[in-house]
Figure 1 (cartoon, one colour):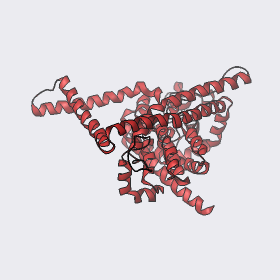
Figure 2 (tube, one colour; figure 1 turned 120 degrees about the vertical axis):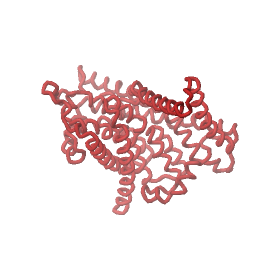
Figure 3 (cartoon, one colour; figure 1 turned 90 degrees about the horizontal axis):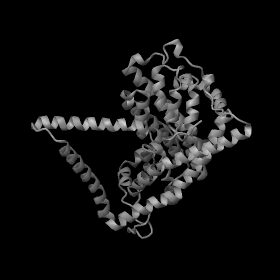
Figure 4 (cartoon, one colour; figure 1 turned 135 degrees about the vertical axis):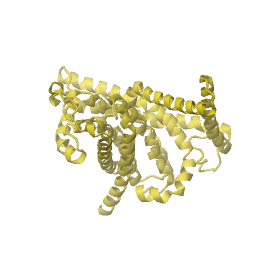
Amino acid sequence: MNILHKNTLNPTQSKSTLDYGKHSESIFRKLGEWLKYPFKFTTKRSFEAAIFLLIFLGFFGFMAYKMTLPHMLNTFMQTAYSLLLETVFYIMAICVLMGAISKLLAEFGVVRLLENILRPLMKPLYNLPGVAALGAIMTFLSDNPAIITLSKDKNFSHYFKKYQLVSLTNFGTAFGMGLVVLAFMTGKGYGSGALVGVVGAVIGSIVSTRLMQRFTLKAYPELDSPVCENEGDSGDEQQISFKSEGSIFMRFLNAILDGGKDGVSIGLAIIPGVLVISTLVMMMTFGPSPDTHVYTGAAYEGVPIITWLADKVDFIFYWLFGFKSPELISFPITALGAVGAALGLVPRFISEGIINGNAIAVFTAMGMCWSGYLSTHTAMLDSMGYRKLISKAIGAHTVGGLCAGIAAHWLYVLLTLIF
């Protein structure tokens, strides 16, 4: 089984760029009709550049005003450098090890065994055929797009109705990078909280998948039909095999090397997200140096915009997720775009002493369930040929992720009271 990563979807992501171009072109056309003056291409680009510069300079100008320009630039670079050395390489090492283990589990039939064990749960929980369990295991061991590989295999997809196949986008995403997230949290000493979070992610996946199916059938009742309507198009799940040729030793060796190599791909894929997104989020989460209370240009300083906003409604986050510090809301926000980047925040939270088992449970649940769905859902549905359902998939998954975090919090509270 190949460990796939988000970069495999880049060709289809260009279509979302085309959508943006069409929308902006429509706006300029209507504006030109209203002004009775057609805009030239260079004029349109100038407008776009002006708006971008206004936002870009406004944001960084505000940061520089608060921190001073030299300190802001130094903090930006020092934070990215620190994240690269202390977090990215650590996550990459986990990805390599988990990639090798995942490949071994697939190579020697453990994945198919787990599928058979989980198969009876698919219909009552998710309204999906039993073979869908294979998709959950694959995405848990790798990443969101792994479900797309399966959905395009007729030996797998012919068991589904069309609306069920579409809901695999939400179903598979809810388990994306689950093994990496679980291993990372356990490695930080919060294994019990992480396990509670996995249960929360399962609850969120049920909500997301069921909502997606409901939204799809309500909008497009015609999708309540088999994927393979012709008998000649049917397949056989027994033909889905991850077994390679050769002796047991060679299969073992190749599985370790190939899985580790795929893990490196995932590790490389998360670098931009961690260094760019996590750096910006941290600079909007933490304030000046806690020792001197002034800006020094050191890593992890910033202007706590997110913290200030979250502090205004902290009672909501406390009741829903049990967050005792407003800074913790940065993790779910970052997980919307990339769970790898969100993991980069955890070591800083630990060093600040603001994290506990409950927060880890919520982080694991929301990190797994969302796992960067805003950056993958569009391309995944595009590749399946259902671009018209993107908004419904995103809406359903947003609700599912929130339910995952809430469920993880209250499950952790319940278990704490019991034990």
